[in-house]
Each structure stands twice: as structure tokens, then as C-alpha cells.
Image 1 (cartoon, rainbow, N blue to C red):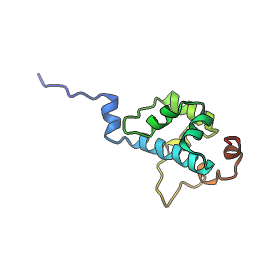
Image 2: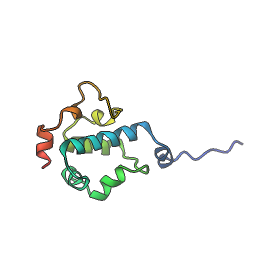
Image 3: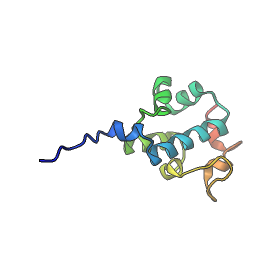
Length: 109
């Protein structure tokens, strides 16, 4: 009988899941657009600072419901947080690209 390999979710996430990376990039882009520290941003989302820092690690593996909760608290569509980004290009119509000075960033302060 063939041996089954262990496919734990955390193992998969640690290897660099595309969606987790996109979520982390999207979340960090929101924080930078709002011009908040990581601690301030976590507080504005209503999550502990340590939880925000964990979300940014390779061990992060947020559930879809948690991603939806974060997006709701940030005032963005959850799919916005899951779009792949590059440093020099953003998706057209992406609300993250136009948040500086927006109601979202003003509400976070």
C-alpha cells in the first residue's frame, strides 16, 4: 500500500500559497494607503496586533470567513484582498489603488 503524504493546511501555506500571498499584499497595501502603523491598522480592524503580525507570516492560513471579516471591517470587497499584485502594476478598477484620502483611510484615523 502506498504511503500517503501529509498535506496539512499549514504545510501548504508555508510553501507559499498564491492566495495567501495576494491576501497579505492586499492587506499591507491597505495599511500603507491609510498611512497607519501595523499596530494602528490592527486596532482599526478590531484585531489584536499579534494577530495582524501572524497574518503576515508564512504560517498564516486565514479561513475564508476570516478574510471576509477583515475585508468587511476594512470596507473593501473580499476579492479585492485576493487579487494578485505586483509592485509596479495594479488591477484596473482596484479600489486599493485609489484609497489615499478616501473615506476608508479617514475612518481609520
